[in-house]
Length: 84
Image (cartoon, rainbow, N blue to C red; front, side, top):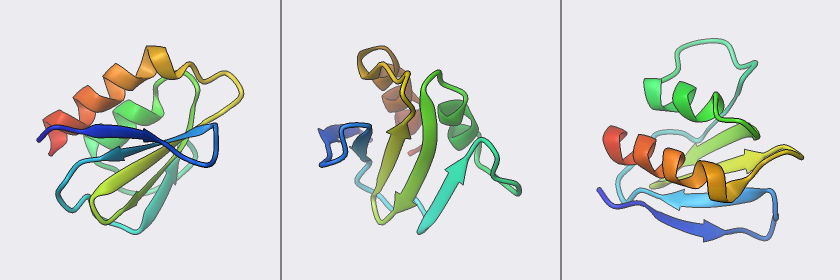
């Protein structure tokens, strides 16, 4: 499924709309314990990613101070397209 990417009012976050239910609402960070899907782990391991928020048909990815959206957006889109 094609993924669309949008900016958000928070300059450190991007909205990735998948178009099908992604689960949630749920928030994940690198410190989150418990079951996580492979695609969640892959995205959280990208440099600069601080957290994921899942709800409805989209995932909001929030970065830390080092996030380089140009560098990681293609990897996020690829992980989401493989998962959904």
